[in-house]
Length: 575
Image 1 (cartoon, one colour):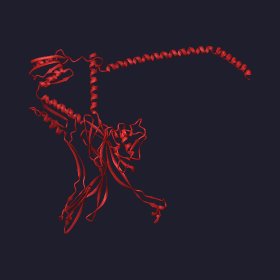
Image 2 (cartoon, one colour):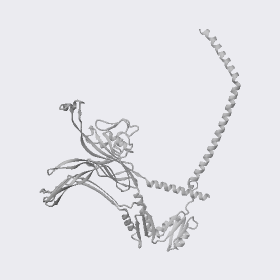
Image 3 (cartoon, rainbow, N blue to C red):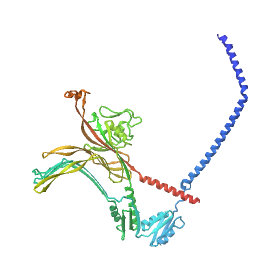
Image 4 (cartoon, rainbow, N blue to C red):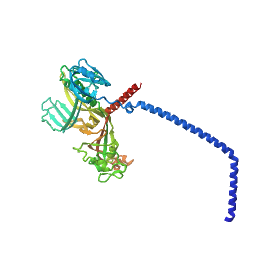
């Protein structure tokens, strides 16, 4: 086989070579033409690349020139150093001293005609602005520097107008939380009145007689209040600042937001510094984001949420494989990308909260609400009742209220009407609204560092009608179920404050029946099942303050203005 096949393979190879040679001879001219076309195409492409490179170089040169023009001149051409010199004078008249101070310097000097006195100084290696500061502090001569122009004023009464940006309003806020066992009072004379007060339940009846003595049970109450009359307090403060100057006067006009002050230069500087601090403090703003959450607890957490699982969290999220073991501890099986459960929950600050009673407040450094909500989901069913968001300025109360007002009878007065010989009595009920829903009032105080002190008073109330028998009569009263707390906490900017421990018990009906048979008259109860189960839930409030950094934005804008002014001066020098 192999011997016979070998010559055939050689013959086939020779035929293939002949065909290739013939093909090359037949397409030779076309191949030469194709090669010329390719060379022309390459030349065109290379010309295009060269043109694009030249265009890019021109654009880069124009961009660099524009950038150089926009950049502050100080970076490329450092500003000339401030002239420094030694100064020694003795008994020189003030007018001559100030005019001679700016000789051979880039400054211009304008001296008020009332500037008098003799100057004696001995200074070394100082500049003109430094000398002017010393003259103001030692001799009391006030000055103003605008660019390279100096204005010198005498140590005498001057009038200056200050702009004060604040609302022309008087504002007051009050918050109260009361725990009372109730009180019962009764008067023992005919035609008097008998009253009943039991927390949110009120009843009063007139025209009856009684003989019981009064008594009361004292509870606990927390009252927080603040009244703000800014313009009155501003007037009193400015009067105190300039009060030591003879002939000084302060006029505050709230309608236009102006304060006119006539005082000596030193007092004017104090007023200027005070108003600057006041404006910076008053205009600090904070955005308050809140989540009001109802957690229906699982069977393993009937004692309440395990708050030991909260701590100073640096990550803010749980790994997907986080779960709760039989002992109620949170376990994380994968901590490669997230903090482990111990690091996330315990934190590094040791004991992080100290609960007092059943309601307490703690802080957690989560980046958002989702981490805290995910943690609560591990202990029960989570329902977000409300997600309010409100902004307020420093030391001003913000109130959020979501719900309904229902009216109930809280007082009944009896009036006697005489018409001839007939005497009629008319009962006049008094209606009082009872709020049912969620209310949250917060008052922030923002520090220079961005920390926020919060007075927080959340209230969740549910009102329903309840019949009471009083003096043999059925009276509909309002029965309120209230969960509230009142606390003062401190949090950093963006830190979440957790308010918990507000628990309640409720019951739900579990009814079941066999379809069809459960509706049979008389025998249907044999195919029905009725039962009740207890449900324990806990109210959790998450609150996050976010400080609006308006001061930082203003600083950035001022720096932008300085750069633009530097650019303008550079362009003026070039022109």
